[in-house]
Image (cartoon, one colour):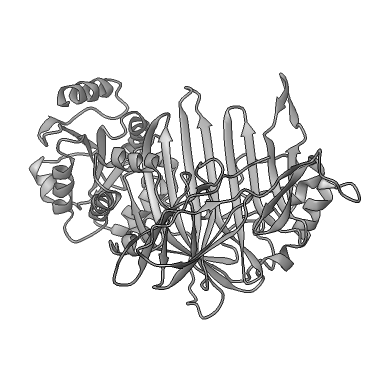
Length: 549
């Protein structure tokens, strides 16, 4: 049985013009161990937060406030008569848990039937009317032991039909709005395949709101939506015992996908597996927590969802997804994505429309440094603080984002591409060498060479900047070619300099494609450099990188 820890609440405050921020920590009364993912609500409001892996939290509060702390496996506790200057130590008491061997019922528990009742009761237990929920988003990745990117955001979700019907994909009946964003550069090897922000992916961890609509022959390892409800017959279920949440008895039900395989020419190949646990109240059959683990060969994805009540209905307050993918070379890519609810709005909220934003749309969001100190965020752990420092060489995440934003905005179309390229060249000094390509949309050899450059990007991530200088005068044609040949991936930097640019004149350009190598000091190392498909180019790059360090 999963047992969460609960306990110590340390409160301190940071004053601001709009909000007052209270920070705290929760530990178990008996063991003094931290309690992760506890729900911390501000009494009398729909605002709240969740504790991190170390039991710490941060929440915006009014002048006079009280807190309500609840967590699966613990007695709910209300802390009242607090002031912003209080130093309060609170120890939450673990609630009694009963293993299945000692639970006594009048009749035998049917775990599969419990799960069916819980799915059938979603429209009674969750809000079927429109509502808005505000979330804090955090997302980081690493290759083996090296962290490569970190993103934080404030996200609003307008569920236009509430939980009236389960969706097979987020965004069909939802509106998504990212209001604040800060992030590092993406230095992971998988950056080319990364979406700009994965709000839909983590939102779909909500099993009460998202389920595949029809049975599937085999479990899809890459699906981000649960298929449990539509494929109940393919699972085995077991009753594991009783625990408590918010004063209510809770069943724990474990499930496991029956072994699955498909015939091949060399025998049978095992298909992805799936197992997990569901925590369901005994009175109304509410999902208050779910744990789902998918695995296939060495790859795994673990998804955990937590729910809390507000005005008699339940809402997700913390969604977490952790994944691991092992490559053919045994390298491992890890990702962690989570959404933490900070407020629920059921009346008098602003209506908005939007989908998961693109990279360009994210860049247009104004950066507000005050927001990150005046509003509820998910408290960072020491590990996450270390990630921020590692990615930014000691710079804060806000400073990293300012650099990232300036870097990306510089690549957008404006009146003077020559000056923007000059900025990028200066910004790269001491960080990377540059491989410059002159091309245009009518140059077929240029386009053929781009695939070879994509392979080089994977090999020389962060060591070489691959810059594509287009001689096209027509912006629409240029952008269409970039989209058609997937040239907007991380690693390529684009500038449309046109036919009459000073850069072309400086290098006395006569034909394309034309390539130039520039060293870390910003000096021309090799004019008329080798083409990207030339195997000797790798030797030039290695030599230049080695001599530049």
